[in-house]
Image (cartoon, rainbow, N blue to C red):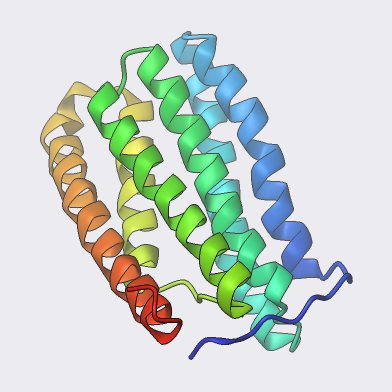
Length: 189
């Protein structure tokens, strides 16, 4: 259930983990752009560390009773920044198609804009939805498979390309329905 926006200024362990995901995307992108396969193992380790922070930040926030509106905004924003940056780097080195990165970026930008609009109008933070969480996992699996550059995994990589693409559209539809519902409360939609 969406709740009225509360502004907190404290940094919690889970919020620090979310922020670290943004920071870790920098060396990931740099190493992908180096194009040498010798860096791919390090990239994979960093991706798994990033995925671990994504898992831990939510669990710790709930376990330590430190769920904040700032964290509700930071966690998905960190995911989006990290994923868009990695997609862009993988496009540059021809490991994923440009159309895929564009769909990922457009969906994420539209979700951020929609969330910002709802926050500004209704002072409500729209919670992440399960469809979005599944989508992030499908995208991560696809990006990891693309990073591996293993011909033996080409079919699996293709399956995750299409699973994540379908999931991108489904999750966007779920978010759009939520945003329309909130706008209808203001007489906008």
